[in-house]
Length: 594
Image (tube, rainbow, N blue to C red; front, side):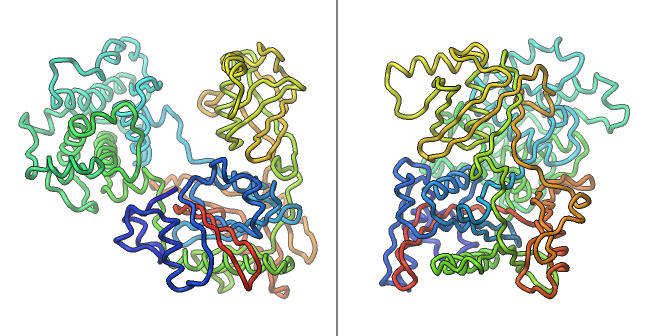
């Protein structure tokens, strides 16, 4: 369902400047038909999770090729391919890294056989009280300040430093984000500025214990940085803003052009206040419903400026807009060559699938640095993981306080967020507790009432030892969850108040040392973790590859050992393509979803 943006043009080969704003699927079809006019391609400008793309739709095809841009959509397609018994060729790229993997029901592991790395998160106390890296400031500016000012007003959001004096500041906390009737936008902006960068920092400093072994932050007030005169705008931009709300820019307004420049504290303060003003004067209708979008120029400017001001307060090096946008949007900048290599490998594996050449299926990893003089590392696909809850239907385990947690918490935090179900149905024994989708009117009220009840208080009580069956009719996917009652949870480490487990976790290198299978190639589960470097602001992807048999039998053990130490694996690109091939090699029909 995506459309072409300017930023897409440097990482692929089918779109041109004049295509910006058009459907990716339709433009891709037209571009391919120019050099292969006699083939049949059906483009769908739609969401792959729409009901029309169900199991019967997938059954039309001989193979599905994935290039999706998020974990949720990938899991959805994986389950539909399993239900339809259609081979799936998965792929992804991140910078110089990439991979192509083949998944065939019953023959190889499915896409979900190995746990995927959870997005990097940071303790709330670090973000709100003691940031030490620029990424902490970005998270604060994006997920707390931006959300508080422009997002859902009903969402819980505490922007105040946690300290022993916090309770005495409650009056200030309640009033500061409310705009008074007689307050003009510049006064309001400065009030917010002074509260979050000045008052809150002073409040934090009042807790001496916190700063015994840390550098003390410096409160920043607008009057100390800026004069009382309003910022001078760069010409009359009213007309431009009316035509395109997303083109509203504080940088343009202030005559600042280069996103690679690192702004001074004064420039950051001017950008902050100008972006604040523009949101309330040019995009007022959106306030209350906004969420951060890396493609929203004004949002990126506001978050960059806010993060830099906070960084200055805590003695953290400032960053330019380009770098800040990359951190805020979790962007690893694309390399067109990597995309081309991975695209070629996808087609090679698709040809093998269409020829039913199972013995020669390979999972190929594109490396940043050569291993054994190879930048492409092909390995044989793994067998299905017997502990996979998706393709092996092994029950999961959920630790939860059944007396406090509501069914709604289970549905939102586990069934939808972690299990990736769209239209779940939840049963306890033979009793239906909840169903989403096309539900009869007389049942809607019953299910809505159930959602607000604690698990132990449901018509069919869910307590320790209960087995729940959760099903998604659209995905034709079923899994069982064993409930384990637990009284207490660590708020920092287990913020959801529940812990889901079930996969067999990867074994360590030491445990795996003497395990061998087949031709001396040992096997272990893959582990991919985001490791936060203590020396800088980078988050490094560290990967332990599975040792798998390689095509070159003479040097198999060395290759596997080298592969194991590569810093790559399971990378997801920022495109969102799904190609389905229907037919044989002589007459291939392609259907494309985007």
